[in-house]
Length: 306
Image 1 (cartoon, rainbow, N blue to C red):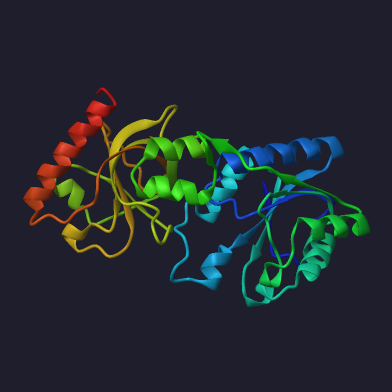
Image 2 (image 1 turned 180 degrees about the vertical axis):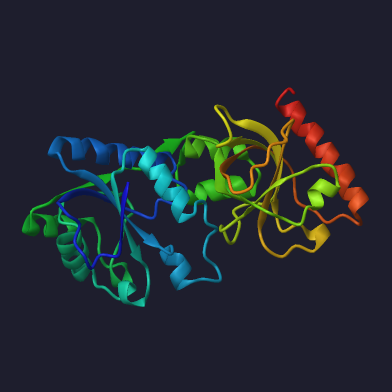
């Protein structure tokens, strides 16, 4: 995938475009992107997305913004897997937020992206004060020469698929429902880094991944499957949180892989959360923590029938 930062320099050629935050890249996004790829094939143009960094709600309300489901890297990788060839990542700052809807159309869609066909979600609004809507885009398309279509919502088990719905499922520990909305198990990716080696002292060596999702969409102990270390995912147990027993303050993902002893420092791995086992909690001492880790590992092994 080609990635363009900002909209001041035009892309090399006209595009078919979808716009959105695409946080989580759920089934609704996948349906929209399928429509994008089909339209791009018909017009023989690059299927392209426009997204924003940070999320607009993080800019406007940093203290109450929703939890990130995906980092920018995770999001772009998932979009690429669905056939997106190009991404324009617009920094969402004061200048961008101040753009009027008309200026957004002229500067970003017209000059920056040379849009020939545009696909949006049914609830998409844009421009300063969220003044832009589907009708304004249609009128602009007739004037500037691009088509516009809106993607209807995708419904699963009577629920409209949305990033907020995924967040609710994760926060409640319902990994099965989150997976239904996403079309895959929820996961996080990252590079394995050196930690404080407490897990090794307790008899459960862990792969430590510093997490950039802040705030976290969920915390707790999970049965997980880990990709990136072989031909098939490896089973394990993971703690996602701040590790209150050892005085942790930063989000960390610690993964103990079953029957595995390779050195994987520096490896980029993907961790898929398949079952929540319990909430994260503080223990009175390391012995109590060690006993609970052993119990968690046994529960996860039973889940995987190991």
